[in-house]
Amino acid sequence: MSSVVRIRVSLADRAGALGQAATVIGLHGGNILSIDVHGTDGSLAIDDLVVDFALEPAMEDLVADLAMAAATIVLHSEPSAPVDPLTAVLTALRFVPGHRPHLTEVLDVICPFTEWSTATGAPGPAPDGTVQIVVPMPGSDESLVGRRPAGMAFTATEWARVDAAAHLGASVGLTV
Image 1 (tube, rainbow, N blue to C red):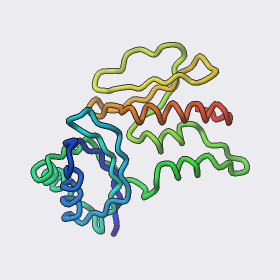
Image 2 (image 1 turned 90 degrees about the vertical axis):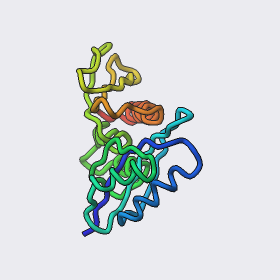
Image 3 (image 1 turned 90 degrees about the horizontal axis):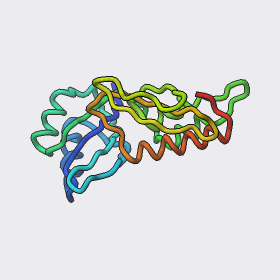
């Protein structure tokens, strides 16, 4: 049975590094459906890969092989739907009669692996073992607060997407 997995990886920011990781994934029966490059710091890149495996993947073996053969660290993985994030957001924003999506439905698509809440004023620091992102809600004294495990820092791309979603949500009247 086919299995689609979203995998966040950290790999060298150099020519061929992503190709090496793709080769390892292919040897494990995976077909990369999409790649979302979150950015680089000059030496490392953070990418989200949506991978369709023909059979349930042996993730421990894949993680070990990526580290050994492609110098790629798997930061997180979870089951996923084989949907492009932008398409999923636009689909979520279609107003079905009687249903208006919550902003968190949109945020879950564009910034996965995150728990969302709101805070009035400045929220406190992130609890131990977590990292957080705080994005002001336009036209409000509230902020969106996203938290995830400490090993999964938020990227600049994710911050920009959450900020854009907050502005879009405010303009069309979405609630959190």
